[in-house]
Length: 446
Ligand SMILES: [Zn+2]
Figure 1: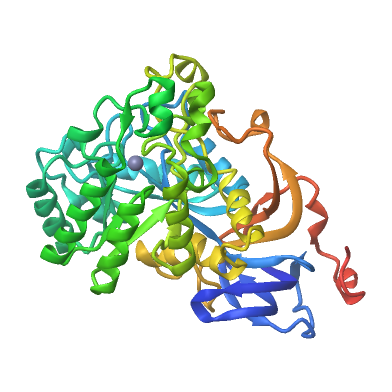
Figure 2: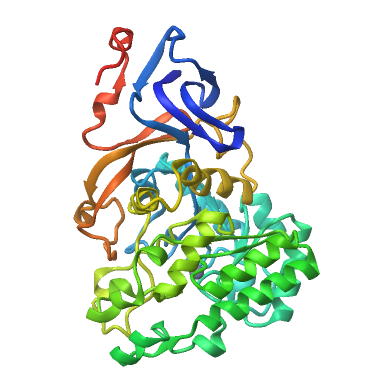
C-alpha cells in the first residue's frame, strides 16, 4: 500500500525541513521526501496537498479519555475520533480513569481498546502512586512493560516533596518522565477559579497562582536532586514558567506544556458563571497570559497539549462551585494554536514543533514527531487559510463542555493520517484524495 502526499509544503523541524516536497509512504512508514518535479511512483494513492502544509502527525501529551469507568463522558474510541478530527495522530491518555491506570492490566486494556478503534495512536500514562492516592508508589516497571510512556498522578497533586522525590528516583530507574499537575492543595483547596480581582468581584473562592508556583519550584529542585526527567503539565502562571526557564538555564531535564485555553481566555470569562470556564488550573489574569506568550516565543514552553477533559452536560449544569473541573479540547487546539500564528506570536514552524516534534521527543516516542525516512507515517495536513467555526454539537467527543462553541478560527488541520491510513478528512476536503495521476500531471486538481 503506497500513498503519496504530493505538492505540499513540508515542515519537519526534527530534520530542519521547511520547503516544498512530496511525502512518499509505504506500508505505514515514510519512505522519503520527493521533489515536486519527480514522477508519481507506480501504484500510489495520491493526496494532492497543493497550497497545504504537511507536518508530522501531531501528538497530544495530555488527554483524559475516561475509559475505563466513565464511558458516558468519553470512550477511548470516541476520544480517538475527536483526536484525529482535531489533527492529532497520537494522544497520550492520563491515568485518572476508574480504576486508575496503576497496573499493567489497565494499561493493556487501554492499548487494546485503541487498537480496536483504529484511529489515533493511544499511549497510556501510568499512575505515579497506587490509586493516585499519593501514599505508595505504583508498579511503574510492570506498566512500562505493558506500554506506558510516562507516569503522573494528574488530576491530583503529589502531596509531599518527600513522596515526589521517591517517585522521581523510582521513575528514573525505568527511564520514565514524571508529569506533574502543580497545585499545592494546602493553598488551592476549595478554590474554583483564579484568585484575584474577578474572584473577589464574583464572590467565588480563588486558587492563588502561588499554589502552582510552589509545586513547580519544588519539582525543579527535585529534578536537580534526582536527575529525573520532569514535565510540568498545563503551566498557567508566570512563576511556574519562570521556574522552568531557570531550570533550563541550569541544564536540568525539565520541560513543560501549556493548554490553549490558558492563553486564549482570562479569568474575566468566568463572569457569567459558565461552568465551561471551570478548569484546573484555572483561567488566569492578563499578566500570566503575557508570560505564557513569552514562554511560547522564547522556547521555555516546549509543547501545546489539550488537557481534553470531557464531562457530561448534567455534571456541568451544576452550580459553578459544584461543577467538575475541565473542558474538552482535542478539536479546538490546532485552531487556537493558529490564532498565535495569526497574531504573530509564533510562526508555523514553531507551531509544528510544539505540537509534534517536542511532544514526541519528551515522551521518547521513537520514529514519531518527524517525517524522516522510516518514521511511522503519521501526518497532519494543515490549511492555514481555512476559516471555520467550531460546531460543538457535531463534535466527535461524547461530551460538549467547551467554552469555544461557535468560535470562528483561521487555520485548521484538514487531514490526519495514522500509519499511512487517512483516518480523518475535514468535510469539504475529500477532493484531496485521488488515485488519478493525470490530475497531478496538470499541476494539481484544485
Ligand atoms: Zn492536570
